[in-house]
Image (cartoon, rainbow, N blue to C red; front, side, top):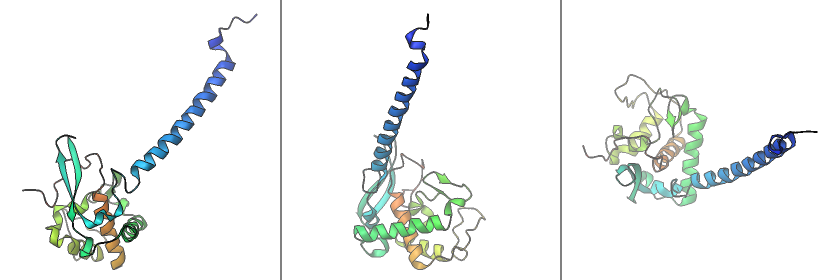
Amino acid sequence: MNNTPPWATEALWKKVAVWVTALSFVLLVVLTFDSMAKTAAGGSRVPAYSVVNKQIDYRYDQAAQRYKPVIGGEQPLFGKALDEATAEQQVSLGKKTVQGKNCINCHTILGNGAYYAPDLTKSWLDPAWISETEREKRMLAFLLDPEKNHVGYGSTRRMPNQHLTEAEARGVIAFLKWMSSIDTNGFPHNFKTITAEQ
């Protein structure tokens, strides 16, 4: 006669393992779709691509106790308003260029990458571009010829020339502007923007 209690039988634990695995799989699928919905462009935390037509800043939100992007009035990229489809094409070209040139081998983007060169997550807002009126022109010149238009951040490190076309450079700038509008839960913390009061 077997005196094993029911909760200690092999058959019970096999069934429990199957059910736990099945429920974990279902939960993983639900969470994956939920995460994809929250991180898709056009949501509450990741704005639509046409945000490149707006003024973007990054300020401390006292109620949330963290830094948040602030989307302002009209400020079209390169002075030309883009519809959603064209804005998506520009941002996608920039993203593919950043990926194709392996920018994260030196830079950090949204927390991923290396720490050799500056973090690009909020680089659109960086005070190194001097002023909002000069920013696009300076960024374009830098991306097309980084050796001649060096922005050093107090460092002697130099970005190698990636031999970008003007279209690729404009796409990268669109990508960087769009990325600066993403709510990254306050990352990077205490970042001073180009419009910050001194």
